[in-house]
Image (cartoon, rainbow, N blue to C red; front, top):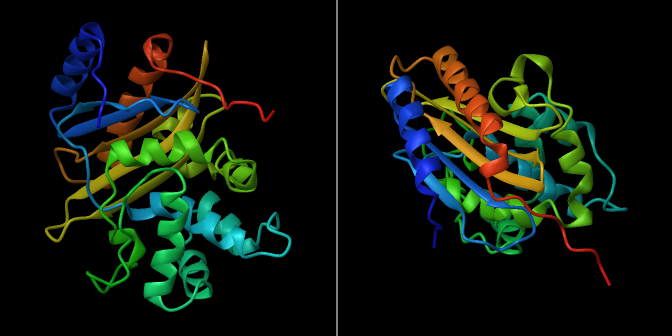
Amino acid sequence: MVGTAPSNLKADFAELQARLHAPVGIAVTAVGSNQPPITMGDLQSGPAWSTIKVPLAIAALRQENPPTTVTSAMSAAITESDNTAAESIWAGLGDPVTAAHEVEAVLQETGDPTTVEYRKVRPEFTAFGQTDWSLADQVKFLSSAVCDPRNDPIFALMGEVVPDQRWGIGTIPDSRFKGGWGPSPTGNYLVRQIGTLNAPTGTVAVAIAVAPASGSFDEGTSDLTEVANWLHDHLAALPAGHCSSPG
């Protein structure tokens, strides 16, 4: 289920789409609200690529003793998008089917029904990165997961991403985010990000994606920065919320 965007927001987004000349999509929802996400644009799903490293790292964190210990592999996977580190985390969760179920369990806690890919569909890439993860499900996951104190160490890492990956949402002050990118079988890149933004009335969970017209990674990051600028300019109009206090 998705929400309906206000007509002025839709019109402004249509202008952004026309400017980019490329398939683009966003999903937004208020943190801690369980509201259906608002989605806009014609690109609403695709391979998760490295955005899946967030629930992957959370699944690994749950297995640490104590479950607050951030390993160097978790840090590298989130802040540098290091694939070797992520593969070591995945292997540490068990065989591929078991590992996929561990990551799915993290998603299911938030109401996200996504099935995590356990097979190396394209042998040169990670199995988990080939998970089909919709923007709407990504913000459903984020808006709930960021309110679970057990996940705080991983969300803290999302505020420490290395400078050369701080495009898109990473250009917005105080954002916490994770990017993902990779080529289609024909070599055209999908570039996407998930994250949280601070708005005047609370926190917004966002997921954005673009398939740049040229197919290049560099144009994809440039396009996502334009999308992030649009989000920043419209922060006051986006659904924002707060995690409820225990009590």
